[in-house]
Amino acid sequence: MSTQPKMETRVLGAGAPRVSKIGLGMMGMSDVYGPADRDEAVATVHAALDAGITLLDTGDFYGMGDNELLLRDALRSSGRDRDEVQISVKFGALRGPGGEWFGNDARPAAVKNFAAYSLRRLGTDHIDIYRPARLDPDVPIEETVGAIQELVEAGYVRYIGLSEVGAESLRRAAAVAPISDLQIEYSLISRGVENAILPAARQAGIGITAYGVLSRGLLSGHWSADRQGDQDGRSFIPRFQGENLKRNLALVEALRRVAEGKGVTVAQAAIAWVAAQGEDIVPLVGARTRERLAESLGAAQMGLSVEDLAAMEEAVPADAVAGERYPEVQMGDLDSER
Image (cartoon, rainbow, N blue to C red; front, side, top):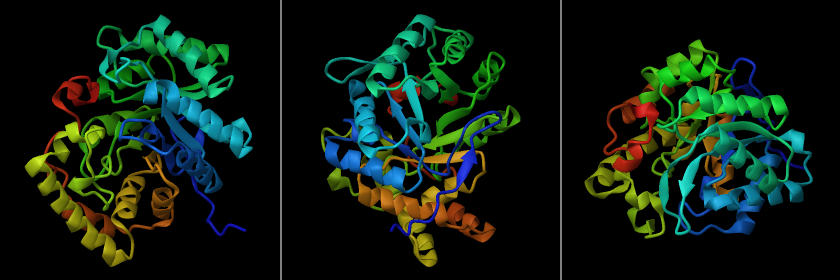
């Protein structure tokens, strides 16, 4: 019999679903960080479910639909009832047959088209949380949210989410329909959300699902530059390049000293720090293997004192990171950075 402690739950926001304290982000299981082992990915989803994780986050553009098929197969083979989990789907990012990226489409007709394909790939009659991956600069956010609300009214979607939008866009969206949560990068080294976006979300009763809590592996404590291959998308991210990487790994070593003082790993400390920022925040861990998942789950049981949090923030000051979190062209797509 498993001795895994019961996973705590959190309510994302006012009128939003109750989900596990930690969610599973599945992007790394399909192509973005280089080749992944599908059997291990399915086993990792099973292990997450066994540990009490109920929030499973995917995107229709992860592996050009492959990630949704992987999630479908993992849920079917797990024997779980569909309503035991909450499936979060991002849509709208456009990709070519060579894997290239070329913009976002959040027109109302496209919203419904993307949803139809996701429902079929996932093998389900509803998506729990549906969100545009990025703001479409050519489409008012009111129109995009209105289209998702029509899917809610038709029973195909349960809740509306957003991703990487700024405070003003968040308020405009919330004026159209209830928003359950905002998915946005938030970690010890990505703290821009704290300035205006997090206060706006809290004022509107909107929760936060925090991705990038380990900054794509940089804060995992396992990163080394020689692991980076040509097929790994991180090779294009400024934080992983040259002198930036050296400076950032020095921050990781400072955090390691704090973590070791508590008898935990760097990854566990970094995840626990995000979880400690509020009951309305749910960290998404991007584990691709059962080993990494098991390590991440240790953060769910960690208690951090005010002194612990201060020590972590002293080791990794909010403005100390070197380099942007995306390449310049992708930074331009982020409404949250405007």
